[in-house]
View 1: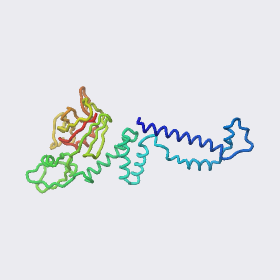
View 2: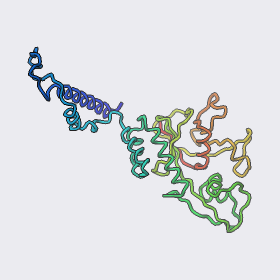
View 3: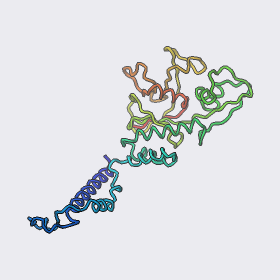
View 4: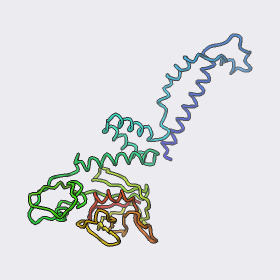
Length: 299
């Protein structure tokens, strides 16, 4: 527990204790009863015993401004505020609140949900072309192929298919126009927080919760890259131009250390080193990653 959390917790207890004592005093102080029993000690003599009117006690509570008590669960108030802002459609203000939670209180109870909401907002922007996604229109030239266009524009065939609504990639003619988006994303394997994060430069995109994380031992920060994106269907290697590619199992291979990110299947097997994500997460990453993307492993 952080020291600031301890301080806030102690402060909250102190304020609540003071409030309780004040209410007890208030109940006995606001009016006196001439027929009350003789006090047994000096303290009772200072505190008349007749209950105070309810209205006067309520006024006292309002003056104490109980709503301003310290946040004993760090980040929760910001998260609740973000949810209220989302409800009224103030997405930019909500985004700032969510970033506050994930940045300063990454282990708070609401942090996981805050990351999920931020991720969905960022993915919507990315695929819709809003902001700095880099989407552009490419005009097909003579001699082009889908694989060549993907390579020259630093993207992948999966994403070209999605952005252009293509069911097949065997028809291409000079003059055709395709929407392309460069995939210069960075993958972070955070061993300490047990997270897989996707970044675009210094901009956070989305986080994924691993089902299994068994990475080679290391210290500090290790830089590597995705050396290959493999696809297997019925145990055999396939590629993005084949009809069975969309339903194939995707495997992201790291250059060094030798490890992979893959879907569950019948893993983890003995000696497995890498990360296992859900099928849905793997399919999403297959749209956003390509060979050559940089990777950082944080220990």
